[in-house]
Amino acid sequence: MIFAATGSGVVLLELGAIILVLGILGRMAGRVGLSPVPLYLAVGLMLGDDAPLDLGASAEFIETAAAIGVALLLFLLGLEYSADELFSTLRAQAPAGAFDLALNFTPGLLAGLLLGWSPLEAFVLGGVTYISSSGIIAKLLGDLGRLGNRETPVILSILVIEDLVMAFYLPLTAGLLAGGSALATGTSVVTAVVVVVVVMIAARWLGPAFSRLVLTDSSEVLLFTVLGLTLLIAGLAEELQVSAAVGAFLVGIALSGPAAERAEPLLLPLRDLFAAAFFVFFGLQIDLGAVPATLPVAAALAVVTSATKVFTGWWAAGRAGIGRRGRWRAGATLVARGEFSVIIAGLAAVEGVGDDLAAVTAAYVLILAVVGPVAARVVDPALARR
Image 1 (cartoon, rainbow, N blue to C red):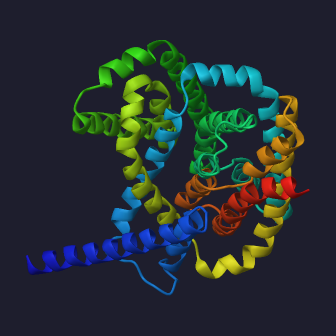
Image 2 (image 1 turned 90 degrees about the vertical axis):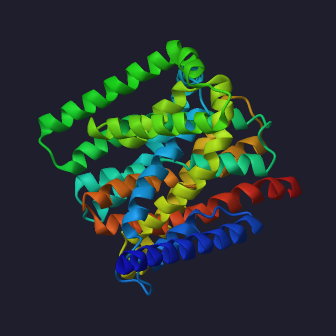
């Protein structure tokens, strides 16, 4: 009993210290108007096997918390959209979404091939450079008071399409990384596509009934019900090789109306806690010594893909008839990369594929999670002065 108590005490000490450090770093990031994501990644980098500090007793707990964090990130992202909105967005903004995919997936794919990586690693890096950070961008739009701007619907439409692309890209990537036969991988991808399409159609027609069934007067019961459903469906999706993240995203889409409005504030603190654990866990998987060597590649990718994202936003906003300042704001806002890029590289890290890929992604996200919010903040004042 003495040894058990001592072990529990070490776990609590480690977790308490990590959470306190994350709180301090989050406060620092908030005061300077930046996302805390790169700081959370840095904490993980400092706690890895070859890092200055060692994390032992609580590593298993952080790994489990990271899986919950991914599910909650995607669930709350799905909660922002209804099935009707997704279908209407696809119809209206499909050209902009296709342009975004072609322009921002290609640099990562080509960079991976030029570096001599395998086609699979290059394919994963393409996904890393393609997807903007919905979490960082959503927070930016609120902090900067731009939710009512004319370009904001264009930005959100592009983010929605990127999220939908991820619903197909993630299971495909997970199947390829698992290294199964072509038939098994193809079957899992087809299964994933069918499940996503069926759930989206069902959410469109049965979402209100599902939401009424979930809704209750008790906040405690609602929290347990929604959290339990999210983790249950995420786990089932993982077993079906559809990806837990996609399963959680679909649950968020299916939930709407008063149930969604009441569930969101209940789950936001849990999302923030467990998402931070995910970013720390990702940092733990990276060899700190490999990061400096990858900085030139990450910086070059950051420069190229910042320009392609700015051009994406500029072009998409122009299609919507938005003026020059709004077009620049749209482009600069889309620059930030974050949680999805880390999730994609995390899939590779779990399968033991591409150590350099994880290091490049970490450095890349560290750069653009800082540059993105700064660019979004300074572009409008700079244009106004001109």
